[in-house]
Image (tube, rainbow, N blue to C red; front, side, top):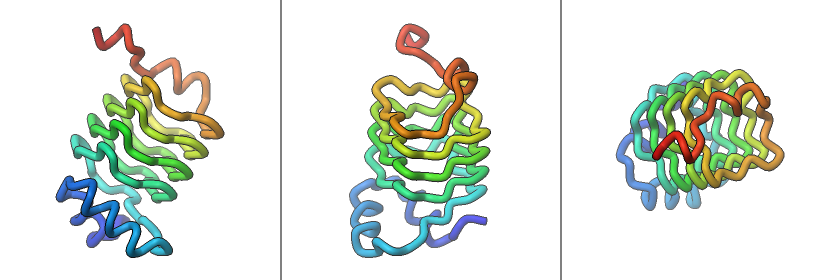
Length: 127
């Protein structure tokens, strides 16, 4: 279950405020497990090392967001925009990536299958 304080701050949708809070609390566990953040604007947010297990990120805009080392096991990223997002070393095991836009995303070291990648939306699909 997600930490309500963190979810409320994230819900404000202001990357600068969130990222400043992250700098002030570097050792705090980011617990957003099973949260509904569908259609949230997360562009530019630092969500590195966040626990996002079973989180609903449907149609969320995570353009240029940092999800490095995040745990996204079983998360629903269907239709999300993760263009240029940093997903390096993220665990995407069992995540729904149907129609997820990953153009320019950093997937180095990420736990992701080729079957998951086949479900994503390519640049030509968005034209």
